[in-house]
Amino acid sequence: FLTYRYFTPESDKSAISDVFAVVRATAAFILAALIALGVSKWKLGRVSPMLWLSTVLIVGFGSITIFLQAPIWIQLKPTVIYLLFGALLLGGVMRGKPLLKYLLEAAFEGLNEAGWMKLSRNWGWFFFVLAALNEVLRRQLEFGDWIAAKLWVFLPLTFITGLLGMNVEGI
Image 1: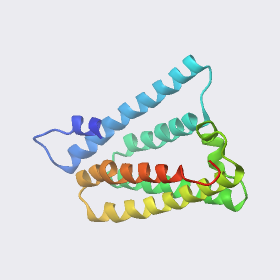
Image 2: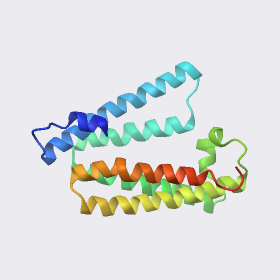
Image 3: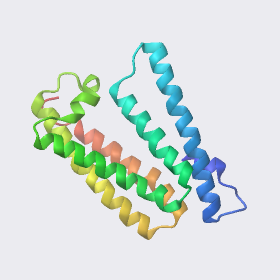
């Protein structure tokens, strides 16, 4: 968000300048993700599954953002990712495999299988809620306001959900 604001010219508040700022911020985010991957490999000797997944998504979807430079794609991208995560997590729960366990096991040592199932289920539904909320805000807000909502609405909701997830039985 701060990188986006940095690249947004003060004198030009057009949609084109907003998209240009998002593209430049995305390029910076891709670079930061790749550096984090390298530092993890260098310092720890390995890369966690969560960091691999994050980097693949950032580079993949970020590259599409840079290539297309379309406001609609920038706004639809979170919906696509949220729907994908929600479907994967709930699909895993329906198959009896809590997929969050494979990504976050080190962060929740001691969580039993039932706890992992609840955590995966709760986050799966949460991602579907985020997808719906993103679509409502995308249709109701101007592009710059939608960008701000990503910080001031989605981030607090994610933190709150994470804190509530700490109360899952089995932790």
